[in-house]
Image (cartoon, rainbow, N blue to C red; front, side, top):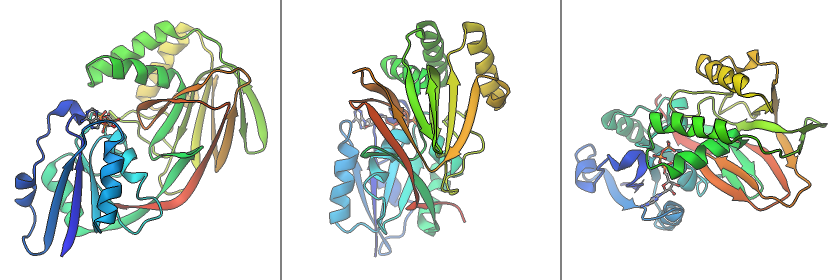
Length: 295
Ligand SMILES: Nc1ncnc2c1ncn2[C@@H]1O[C@H](COP(=O)(O)OP(=O)(O)OP(=O)(O)O)[C@@H](O)[C@H]1O
């Protein structure tokens, strides 16, 4: 018997999905698959449910949600032999899109039944993990406004970008140490990416790969408002490197530090996080998560 546990975020993707045990059972074989469906009730509950599923000896644990839910479930599975399944019912679904996991329920469940796995890299930031990307500056501000608007849609995302463009003015001098070189920056954005997709088919690091053992880093120093708009166009065209203030790096690890006492306001896999430390140590853990994908 294959024990498959589904951890469902009921509010992901505007809460439009209605994944129930009765619905899921239609796609599986009684006597071969044993299904358990759990619903998260609050932030970080999905992590707790995953830890319980591990002690209940689940053979496969499926994150049903967007990048935030995947982060909570997958963080508990790093280094484990239990593979992560994904049902992309989130809003942006960046990681699922990079892994070519379809949004159609039947096709996504087919991947889980087939049990074909690949190992992917995992990003580490101090004692937390990210699977898609993390960022500081403009994109953290976008996530802050996106989370506080009640509209988790592409138009809500565009609106959050416009509000963030209006608000970006504060200086935050940082030291970034990459590949033994120190860069002192007043960044508009720092994005550290494992995946080549941020969701909604957008990418700031189109060359990133989930399996290359490297983090792709984009640093854009402070720019004026016209250039910010031009950057928006370049993001859509996937040609951010055309901007002369944009610098790209590939590395296995980097450090960010700031001298003032402020916390780092950052986004990790699309969720706003306030990291109360003057130093961020960011690294890659190569091929440390098994994920179910199409063969
Ligand atoms: N019952 C719940 N009520 C409120 N928040 C929840 C609940 N269950 C999970 N969450 C939180 O919802 C947040 C958003 O989840 P998730 O990222 O999966 O969806 P999304 O934002 O729609 O998708 P994406 O990240 O792909 O845009 C996560 O931080 C998660 O911890």
